[in-house]
Image (cartoon, rainbow, N blue to C red; front, side, top):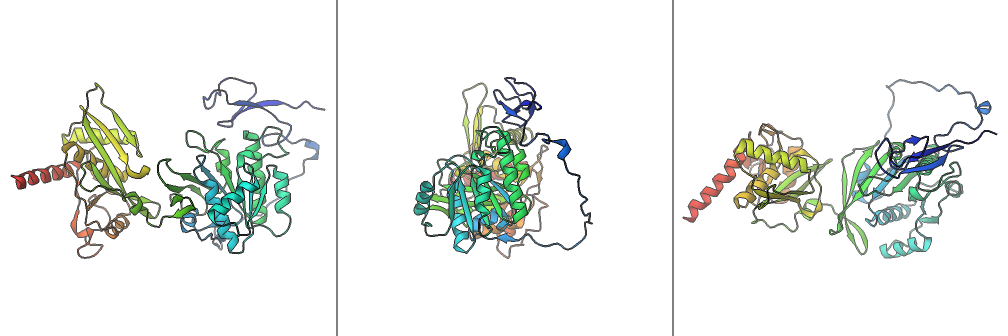
Length: 472
């Protein structure tokens, strides 16, 4: 009998090593190599080459042909369906990640109850909690009467045998993938081999039966789903459930979706009765806004097809340090340094002796470059001590030459701003046809469209001089 080989697999990146080392050569992490056998499981060779069957020919077809929309299961929770692209796709695998205690199990319990109330067969399998704990959560959420089938099990073969009994389930929720283990792999639960093998077995079941599978994944301290990224490549959609500990709202963000857009978000508010949908996130992020404070600018952003208005706060204070501080929350720190450099080089605004603090109100995170103009306006406003107009929104990208570049979806941004009572806007010249496009007397008619960042700085400084003249 051939001796089974032993290999060492990095639990951070999944790379395979023939001998143990303190540091992984692929990702550079320390103490992540775990010994795993190759007698079976993912990555191992066939047990007996003589028993290997001959491959069969598959049918090749062309790119042209009939196209059918993916059949979906709509949960009825609007924000959840928005993030998934319209509901759960039959035969698909969905991975949901998030920080511990953020509300992943609460969200999935509410979604399972909503689907079960519509007559779908829903199976909720937990590897971390007992059935009594899940029932306690269901009672708190007020969904204990819904016919959701519960189980507390971690063995993949036992789970597959259980859900194969009776009618095929429409949705199977596994909480979490790191607790599952399969007989096909010899390593301990939570290792790369076990996570990959368990995920592959459940995905194979979803594809062969048409049942939708939801896998819950743990998140590392860097904010990534624990384990190698190969699990994210295997599933059809990846959602991150985000939120700050000091805020009561949660954001369900789509980062991968084979059946829908990858930049949608769903916004929820956490309460003692569970998660509540937030139909208008702009009102949530602007709820505690102080209109007369210097250094505050309202940014009209886009999250997928949804416009979101959020307040950007800047504080520029004199510094006693040789190297002034630059602190950013909710935005890219490197992009802030770029905006400061453009303001100094092309607009004559000096920040070399000042500390700069930038914050996106409500703990919201901005990733699109359209926030450049709002950030620049907030910085200049804080430095001059002049509050920006309370009814004005800002969006536009700033280049290194100081030019203001157009961004997409200008019409949707302005319509959202007008719906919330804003009467003016600062946006790039050359955007979509927005001037007068919202109607007579709308924001489009009173929009200021600078071609250079210096034009906006001159406008803010000019309004300061005119206000000083009125006081005299």
